[in-house]
Length: 444
Figure 1: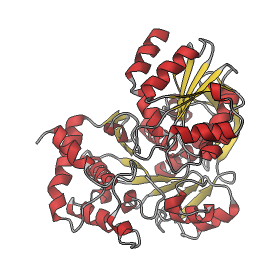
Figure 2 (figure 1 turned 90 degrees about the horizontal axis):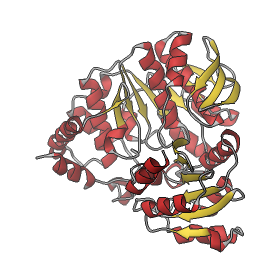
Figure 3 (figure 1 turned 30 degrees about the vertical axis):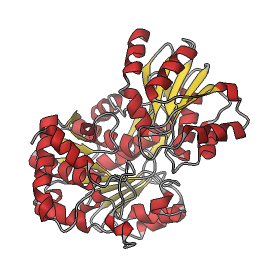
């Protein structure tokens, strides 16, 4: 049995990311459970017990923060595994050790292992549970010093919550995935707080005092709070990123270059520094901090991938993320004629997203469906834009991301901007688009 078999086997499982299937407990109207994940990892030898972990949740910034935590610990000399989701271009994107994606043959062997275990389970695992168990097994087998694990959704009932995080990170709390987590920030916070244990060192990036109480009620072993114990003292625009002054519980670092766009990445850097420091147990040298943040990457997050015209990919998929994108475009980039390629998933309110993104600076709105069964009909987004007074003759609906990119590059002047946003699935497809690669090569 080869790679194609195991990928097809994986794809046949319930996959909430793509809206394929329904979990059995939902169909039976039962409470959510970690029983499948616990049973699966137990049969695989409980690999999560072998590796110290930094467990990261929050509404926005989880992936960027996770990658910066990993970068700091790697620069300090730790062997670091990182598990994030969803992937952008390839499944392998989700699992890395020391910044290198898992190889195809390694991933196939991990899937083979889960495939062998599955007949002994009382209930079939989901797509995400399989990948999470595979990542934990890989990190254990490769004897990493620490694994940075990003929560997929929420916290309490997320498959990653079989780990007991030595350090638990909450980036922030905003309204998103309300169909799963609840309609209020308080309910969402309670779900995210579920990854905190009495043995955890908590790094809390959320600053709302009422929400903070929800996290502190979980009685972590220790806690550091943004704007009390750590934070950003200064956050300035720099060529290719941000120049920040950071304060951690143990040290201060001034004029640190963060090679990511957007003021919010300075905030993520502060959380990452506090989290990595909590794991390390001591302050980092100035050299380690500068190396880690100066080389930080976060694909698909305000990522500049071409020039003439400038092409920026950003997976902003909720209102808070859209507002951050809008702020970054206004501060980090020179004003220019702007084309926006936008695609949303059906759970999103198109008018709310358009208002957050802002249409005042958009000369051309190109709409297409992300490559997901959960995609929202682009015409629905067009109708929302029309209802906001956006001119019909400046709206184009494309059948694919390749077609959208080709049209946008043709219609956007060389001194203009093309922004691809609204969904990580759309951004991932844009990164891998043949039409985009060809156009990018010509531009370079």
